[in-house]
Length: 137
Image (cartoon, rainbow, N blue to C red; front, side):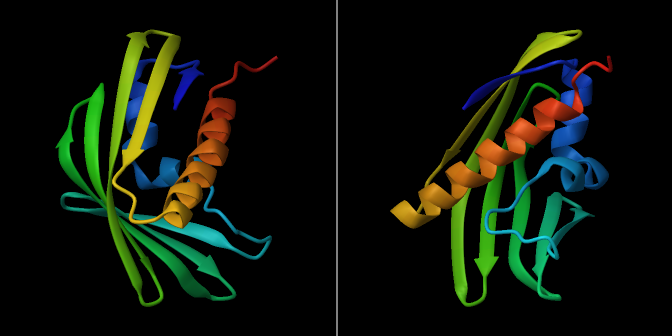
């Protein structure tokens, strides 16, 4: 997936890595009005806990394989009740100043259902991320 973002590479990198920003734009599939996301920093990445009905419904443990301002790779571990999957997420930022392009590749899904879950996650999340950087009118 590729999107245009009205921000420089530094601001995009912050949005992709800092818990307070992750909570603002990541949209977990199947969420309800009562659900919420809690992000926390780990020594080698971050953890996302998606709460629904007062309990953690989905946990993502994202560990950096490498992290640079313009390019990062994450080992993405999704834990959902008794189910556990691993995949790889690559982000790349091109451009600079106020007009950048964010490229995302999420690969290594175990099943078609996991692939569809990932597509839903990133479509909604990237749309929200883009909206956070729209100029005020």
